[in-house]
Image 1 (tube, chains in turn purple, blue):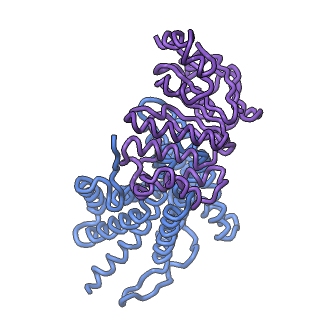
Image 2 (image 1 turned 180 degrees about the horizontal axis):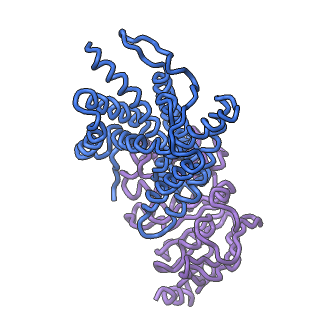
Image 3 (image 1 turned 45 degrees about the horizontal axis):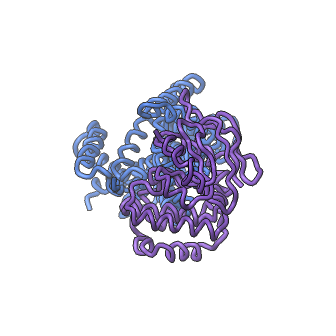
Length: 236
Length: 296
């Protein structure tokens, strides 16, 4: 289980996140919603260890990891797909995958792990020797997702996986995410601006506004009923 | 072949190998941080000076060299921690490291002048003496020159293999491309950066010792011009490329010696920089550098 206790993130004088608490169970998907600048990315960056935590704690499976540097957290199984489609653009697709696998848990042998990725996204096999920066947006997102899953993670953080992609690709990406979450039984946290999309695949949802939690509940409740209006209101 | 031409060629290859070694040291930190230690020359000088000092205290020459290299490696860590990292952290353009590394180099130079004196001191023979020769095509070739060439080529091959064949080589490359992404992927970025500065400093130290024994003397100003030419070699060959460092070093070395022999020794350095400007206009990524390819 991933647990945040009264987490606060500050960049100098700028307050990015304040008093955020959350429990995300293994085998479930948590959706983090909110407008631009609401603090979704800061929250994920605090979990993976690249944002300065000003107060509060991050716990993974009961262990306090707040003081650990990012590489140590990665070793414990936190895989973070950062916003803005971050991958090593000057490296080939396969080199990106190889690096991710090499510094991951290595629970599966490299040839098997690679075959799994190519089985899931055959287009990546065709582009194996292409520089990742030259792929289309959708293909890049496939590489990024594969780089996180090839590490055999314990906790998967996905920051806006749908950003800037065609609807049909978004469908495919989300199909993969839900399938992978169900089959691997790990903790999955998705930050998303497309609220309806994320709430449909997740079990619980958290809405951030200006760094604070304004709504928190089961995804079904957030989607329907009175909370639906509250959800819309929290964006305005 | 013309004997004069041949001797110039040999001298060019020898100094070229030295430039290549320096370029290699500059490349190492460029790999991880896209920065260079412009105080590299002072590290060369310091390593050579320390070797002289330690061996004058009765230490065996080999041990003196080893001890000096250890000191220089520690200085490399110091440079990363106190001159490069703070400069990279500061917001608003991060070219501060150019001044801070150069400044630290000048500081070391001053320190050496204060404690060792600014006179040139005799450098002990490390591997061969100046009297050791082999004959190539009827020309005498100093074994000391050959050692420099052999060390440069061996190191370049080793580094090329490391970068191309090992996952750690890829990790080093990844750190330079996107340090934050490298961090969240579990790559120990801090350790790699520190290591690259230590290794780069050791390379500078090795280059310093090898050149000092060729020249026979060393003084606090030693190394400064050499780093400039090493920098030209690195850029000419393609920043970050080990093979490029070798090619760039040899090119600069041979051309400057030929110019020195047939035109004027005063023109040697001028020609090197003219060559740099010309090459950058025609091929900005350098001989072996890859142009940046990316899609928005």
